[in-house]
Length: 449
Image 1 (cartoon, rainbow, N blue to C red):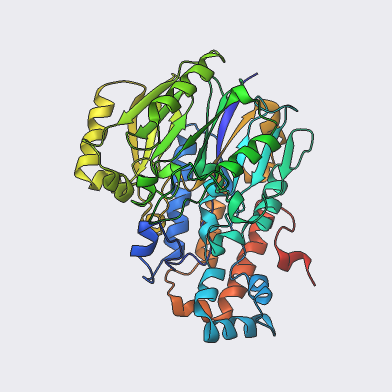
Image 2: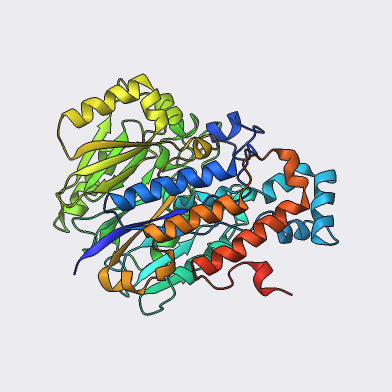
């Protein structure tokens, strides 16, 4: 049965701002407190979605969170009307208000881990929302994420939704940013690749010294159990702690996989030879031929990779078996990275084309093409069961552009977050969006008195 990998991109939210909230994310911290342009950010994300749709790829949309998160502020002791909560937080604890306004849900590679039905014990597609408990501003996302995903993938005959793992350090889970899947065909059994930064319970595993390792081995193992994955269809690999300390906070900043191909930096993993050997052996047992494309440090340094987001790219399969690499404009602006990419495509190997997109608004906050999408492999009957309102079409694209232009500001600074009017604008926008995407009531303001 024919299957597709569908990319569901996160819509950039109306409160897109540069709060510098993500310690360990070089771009996020270096651009802290600059003015942002939410309207431009949303338009840039939509332009990428539309371009990939026009190239023949299946493309969907994932709605943003309600921000500011007034309920989160109330849990921290701020009381009164919504407007009073926002004003008091701005006056007494501005960093908490900034965190409650973060539009980081736009990077839906962190929304969940997804296992296709071909891999799971019960033959259904499994979703586990990521707890993201390493960062407060992200840890508040998973309840709404779960509701949005359940509204998109609602048919229990085909889809299973698991709640986030316990919100403790031992089970830090960052979703698909540390997970990929290799297969001969999207509808056939594959090998799921979980990359972790540390072990919570075994001190023999080395850890980074400067920046936190966000994903634990134990979280990855728990997700694999919840999804009913077999041992011969899973490979666990530890991220190189030295690259985490250089700003590689997720595996998708140093590696990207698709089909039978892993495109990665030479220094991405600890014990690379053993990791690649396991992937090759397990994929071969499923009829596949694993291919690793290792970018040498002599050609592209880890610093180059972090600055350009070369590996935070989308690797997409065309019907003829070749692949296209979707990269941000920053790759073209880095001489060493661009030279490497020209050499790579000139070889006429599996990666035959590079597509460049302007995603500056997202990139300044530390998210590239791969961060903006959640990949879901679906067989034809499963795709037919997805809420059709979230599948991108030309009319939906035009409607979303109009929606953005109607509701989004073109300039946002920290001081603007203290304006209660911003909450009203966000709620008005999201209420309309749920009707556009046919999601029903997924936001607390829609179903709470």
